[in-house]
Amino acid sequence: MFTTASETPIILTVVLVALGILGWGFIRARKFGKLGILAWLQSVVLISPWLLFFGLFATGIYLNLAGVLLLIVASTAIYVFLGNRLRAAGQDAILRAKATEKLAGNSTTPEPNAADDSSVKAVEILNKPEVMPIPDEDLTAIRGIFGIDTFFATESIPYQDGVIFKGNLRGEPEAVYNRLNTTLQERMGASEAAPEKPRYRLFLVENVDGRPVVIVLPSRNDPRPSTVGQKIFALVLFLATIATSLETAGILQGFDFFTIPGRFPEALPIALGILAVLAAHEIGHRVLAQRYQVRLSPPFFLPTLQIGAFGAITRIESLLPNRTALFDIAIAGPVAGGVVSLLMLFAGLILSHPGSMYQVPSQFFQGSILVGALSKVVLGSAVNQALVDVHPLTIIGWLGLVITALNLMPAGQLDGGRVVQAIYGRKTAGRTTFATVIVLAIASLANPLALYWAVVILFLQRDLERPSLNELTEPNDARAALGLLALFLMIATLLPLTPALAGRLGIGG
Image (cartoon, rainbow, N blue to C red; front, side, top):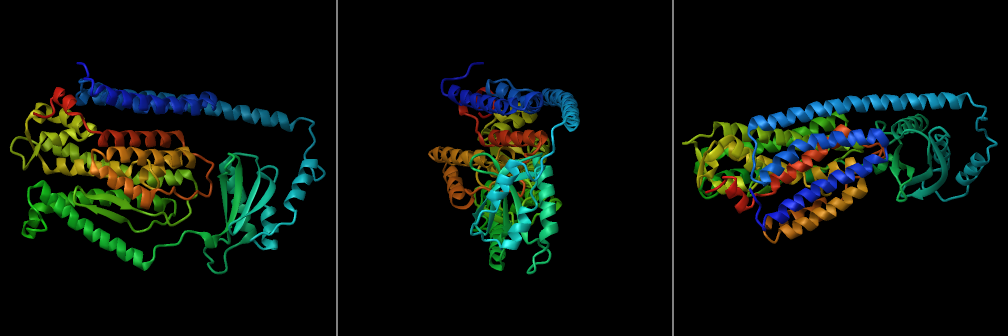
């Protein structure tokens, strides 16, 4: 099989993007030595089966279900093997660090003391007169939490209602943060206005110059819970989403539900399926949020006549402890909604047969590489007909995957944007947000739906999530691999097949 001239740029772009992501990951991992390379290889192994599957699919070769399972099993075995090597290498590194620490402890180097020049200099800088928004007695107590074995503070700068402390991090970020925060809360106690809250919040973040800094702010700056008016508005949007889901179900069956509400029983199954996907998505977010004791706002659904709903906007109304919590809460919704959608799609395809309840044009399977590939694997030559008989779960699963994929776009406070921010940090998340808006603006020339999402991101979701309390500790490699896999499946869901390629693969009449 050979690709046509019109398809070559698309395939080449996908290949270059995939190679670029892998190359970028290698560059980031190389500075961590053997541990970094092994972690990078784990990510490559996890994604390779899907890259191979869709790469072969793009060239006109598709694997059956047994072949896909074989690839997944093989990649899992290699992933576990690399994980064992990674743990062994990590243990070696810990042993070497302990040996070095022991040797250093036996040396004749004198311990730092109050007469040390750098310590005296630091004290002088910290004690220089400044107008601080925090009371002097509180500021003195806060300065006392720092030490040469945690964070060696060298300068304090007024910031909003609190203070930024510049200095040198003297340990692993998570351990340092826990020690500093525990000491701060022991010294400062709870707020008089809100006894359940501490008086001050401590943030360990990265400064604009890339160096760690500590920020201490009064807890009165914590995020505010949703107002009664906002909750009422969320309820109105939910009711509107029920209506648009019924209308979408009616349109898929060839009638206008708003004009003929008496056909409610016919529209109900598909509408309930759409709402089930939305509910699974929101439950996923809230289960993980409860685990981290993070408060979420009510979901503000985005009703639409095209697919029932575009998902929901959910604000995080508590301070996040770290980037791992941000990742887990953000990814839990798409994972839950995506799993439910995939199960519905698989069940629908397996239950589909000549004479099934619904008939869809074969172009239905050309709208997504992922859906088209799975449909070809399960239904075989049936997808080559002009009209294909399918079970209702097939339609619901496809709609659910689209809803999930739209929310995984790497922009702002969408789930995908939060995932990117958690894994790669705020700078990268800002760049991907800008890139996503540009791509959507270009895509809107062919699809008005892309323009809608560009507007939603620009006016509602463009801002990044607020920094976590501990912004320096990154999620582990397993989470990073899961995030990359989710973003890859998002692309595979939203990227359509070209008519020529779909024809050669036997999808469409």
